[in-house]
Length: 578
Image 1 (cartoon, rainbow, N blue to C red):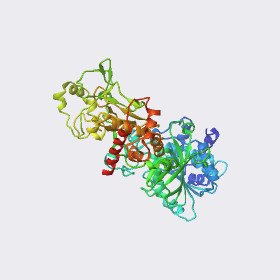
Image 2 (image 1 turned 120 degrees about the vertical axis):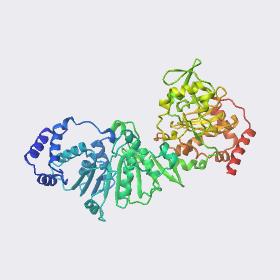
Image 3 (image 1 turned 60 degrees about the vertical axis):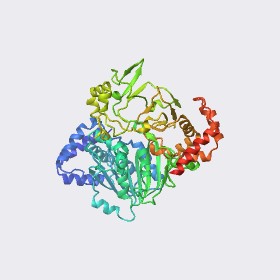
Image 4 (image 1 turned 90 degrees about the horizontal axis):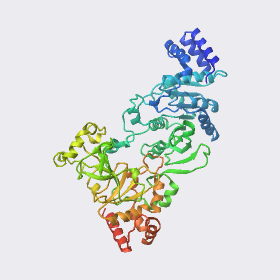
């Protein structure tokens, strides 16, 4: 809390002197900050702000704003001192109220130049008030530039860049950029967004369906690395651990010159009262294109918990574990598919209860049975074997290009039902429905109608593979949060489920999956499981014993070594033909 007498003294000073140049000169001698006020109107704004200061408590949600507590900024700066890093130049690209700046002033007496950027006027005034209070007892012998600007378009001042280009400078880029994605910002209609560009260079449907989405923090950190990668120093930024993963994953593609890369975990619940996996991203600038990152904690930063990064051209979450199971790495002989997407579950998904169908609006539905199929969501894939469900889904197409007008003549009840909810169905926002037949769905094809499937939820941490049967003589459909393989015969599905359920497969997945991801299991991850290599390296007896000890309780199936050999040959032959 700002002392009342300090605020009163400051108010009296500003009200008694109206010469902006004189005030700026006096304040610069005290704080090191150039051009404290832009004009006399800025003084009036500041005075008004001082009057209202005690009631200013709201955060700026549209900036993903979590002001960093001073005890955390102190701890980070103390750690940097402990490892022997003493910067003379500092950049804070999203300054906020300035806690990183004040910790740096306390722990880095060698600082000569501080460069701050902050978009919000309210935080500019809070920062300047805090700076005045910080320098109240002892004037600061440092040059400070503060720019109220958008970091996405900001141009660093020539004076600062000239200072930084001196060969002996040690730069620290530090801060806590917004923990929010560009998509979330757009939904909030915020102006604080980067230029419209796909910085990861994703193509076509990948960018459309979400891979083009990124955290604003990631964009800012990448920009700082690319802008200052040729300068000696460090970057130390708080962010979600998924951001650090993405940066390390793109080290080679974006030619990021970093070394000594660390992800130092923090307790986001304790520090910010939010549920998120977060860390301090720390790395040396002007490095040698390192390909891995070491994980530790801020409480014990010297103790390595895990290392992730690139091994033989493959991106993995646990390098040590991966080296034990990398023999499974390859390409799946089967294509993993994602479940259907319709973006209208209250209309398209129906619950069957005592012979009646209810939609998501709790309305009874009477339609033809032919276009209804049993349906599973991610939350249903907790069982190893699935033979029943009370959810059913309307399937309007057998392929993405199939016209849907046939429904009107062949299934008039279903067509009238869809028409009754046309306002909702016709206004689905995803571009995947643009220029497609009315009431289209996505993620559908001949494969979806195969009778047997082996599926996994994209969300769960533990890799649970479910063996899925037809229900009421119809193939079971899955939603788009699930990934699955599909089969004409039960035997092929069973043996594939057996291979995917074994310990070796789970350990391999644990070595390549990042559990802090919103969706740890993706098609990209699952396609790396080479069933052929599993078959070559393990004998029939191994899998038979695993079945007896771990899976037999879920389903009884009598199979022989000859059956298994037949399946194995089919897999290996398909691999060799490709």
